[in-house]
Image (tube, rainbow, N blue to C red; front, side, top):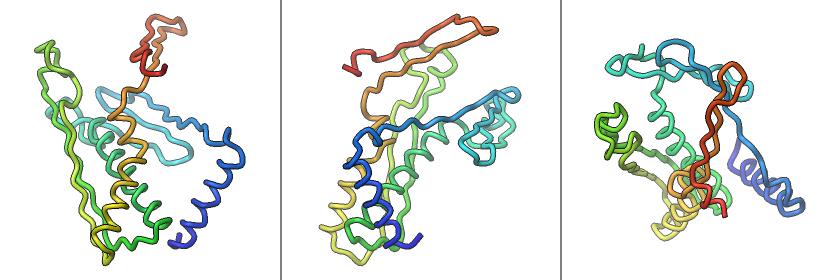
Length: 184
């Protein structure tokens, strides 16, 4: 898609949302299933299956990214999408854009060896490398727009209510309702 086509598509989408605010509410869905050991398969829309696995040190067969790597990939690529979108709308030329994301993980938490250590990332950092002939002021404005409107960056930095249910042979055996107050 050309830069002008991208800009036109985004402007058309924005206009649709302005005309029909209810069209702004969408639901994204990923379906996953455990295939074997710690290897899972993700099914998203009509795309080929995505294998999610762990490296051998965690008992995996290293046939795909780990879930943590998937999250870091989602964070980096979501920002890149926002950079591309806003660059087209703001008239910024991006010759190159690369984002490297890092997640710090303490295995004491994941392996339940220390209940004071969280099982998830203890910190996430990213570095964005941009090549452009545009002015630093114009690029700073783009960075601000991309970072402040990135759905994944927002999701992992804001408390988002999470609801989950577990079923055994079709019977509900567990529910999770985390951060109920964040929705209010």
